[in-house]
Image (cartoon, rainbow, N blue to C red; front, side, top):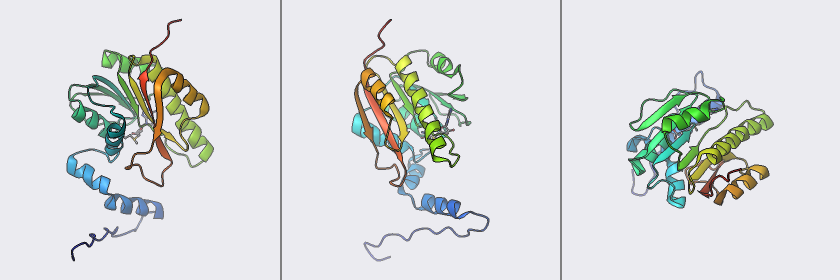
Length: 223
Ligand SMILES: C[S@@+](CC[C@H](N)C(=O)[O-])C[C@H]1O[C@@H](n2cnc3c(N)ncnc32)[C@H](O)[C@@H]1O
């Protein structure tokens, strides 16, 4: 290979039995630098870099002690939290099973179940100082339904964060297509000192995924 040449893209050898969409997905995975980096650096997902990049921009992870990870599978974000703050206790929840991660308690259940919030806090044993959510609803291919289901998860995650965070705590959540809706944004702005939207460089350009980052939780006002 001549100096300056880029290595040739890997080709998907056979498309037999694959749909065009899954062939495209596989080709993208094989040539994705973040997938390669995740493998080399021992992260379970390329998603790990989204949290690392958000941390670089917003300073979310250093010194955190109690963290809830919503939609934890396969565990990339939880690994990132533990690498940056090895003393942090992390509780993660997912519909899917997750291989054990040292220092991370894993609940396999639906976050939308009535008892999920109490189970998370009981496992953590303390109010969290950080709640992160990378949850995404399985898409059904009907844009309005998909949007509503995902926004339902974001709203539930925000409600959980506002109900449980320690004062000064932070909330990070994946959101879609233009970010949070007006009502949720107003709610976050009244509960946190700063609320920003960001698209980290590792989030694929073609995807509608963004993240909302809310920092400086003001605390709950007693009624
Ligand atoms: C993009 S993945 C998370 C990747 C993870 N942050 C990482 O770095 O490995 C989204 C996850 O959200 C989970 N999820 C979606 N809806 C959920 C729900 N209602 N309760 C719990 N987990 C859910 C999915 O099962 C999926 O594993």
